[in-house]
Length: 396
Ligand SMILES: Cc1ncc(COP(=O)(O)O)c(C=O)c1O
Image (cartoon, rainbow, N blue to C red; front, side, top):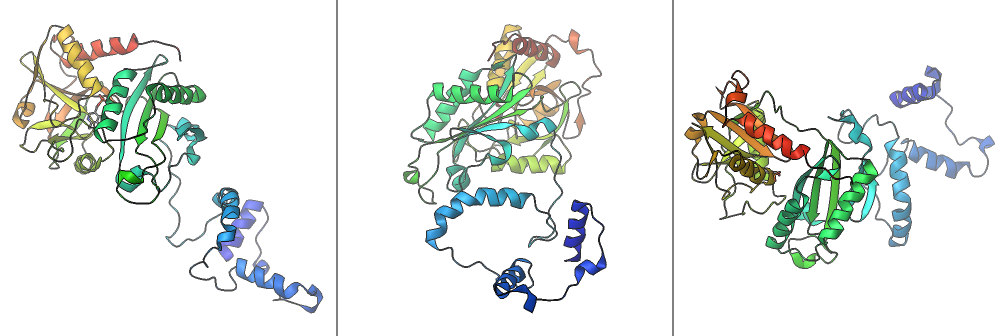
């Protein structure tokens, strides 16, 4: 009680006094005829009367009123000073990696809303079972890089999972452009595009409960490439295996990301930037978030897309490798081939083309050689990749 009062005084900029904690208990005769009822309510709201542990059932006649007034109540509640709660003191508000993302607008199910209001229903399939598909997109010079290729993969993923009432390509593009324009995002932007199977009429697994159509989310954030694409990143080999087509086909870009998240946990614990995931037979498939390439004696190689996601950046880089007249192999690659490679790099929309400086604590001495003279080197393809992205222009 004292802490609350001290906090209140601090907020109101008035000095706290011990005497504020004591006053004569009412009701007093001078308080008038309504005093007993008034005091009863005050005692309840100030917690002098112990509160019920669990609330009374809500009369159904009040449901509509609750629905209308709750957003305002919650808005006020967010502004209150919380001294204690059932779960202990609240965690301090974290700072965002890019503070400008505090005030972004997000597309959720047909509406553009501020960050804190961007929510899906608890009945949504993505909550009920991770039942959603997604794409990561990047904006260069006012244009979404390879948008149609990403949408092709999104539609293929949705079709493979038998989604129904999927929005059209034009509708999705419209939602993306409206979101980007509303935020004034024409550069340095990454979009997390999610399409869930939609809201269910009741909780459960069956898509037969999905009678509202899909939910589309366009989350655009200010985000420069996330890796150190000059100095390189470190990788560690995870014990968690990549999904095989026996259980969940990696060609579907779905939201069941737990096996990749477990690999990322291993990477974090090993203090590496990311983790390499093997397939069920022990061959390298990809990292927890990117595709992977190696260079050995002038030949570029990448694993078959049997266990990895057939990445759009992977495909772009493969085209560039051929265009630069380098030898390209797409085949099963073992871990020892990566350990003994001359160069290793990863590819993905989020981080673009990223050199690997160290894998399983085996250093690649990235940056100590003259990569410009290396015709089959990471630098050569990285430069070619940057030229491709730089030439990608269209005003939204
Ligand atoms: C597991 C995984 N691998 C690779 C990639 C890279 O794919 P893309 O180049 O299409 O972004 C992603 C990106 O979402 C991914 O999640």
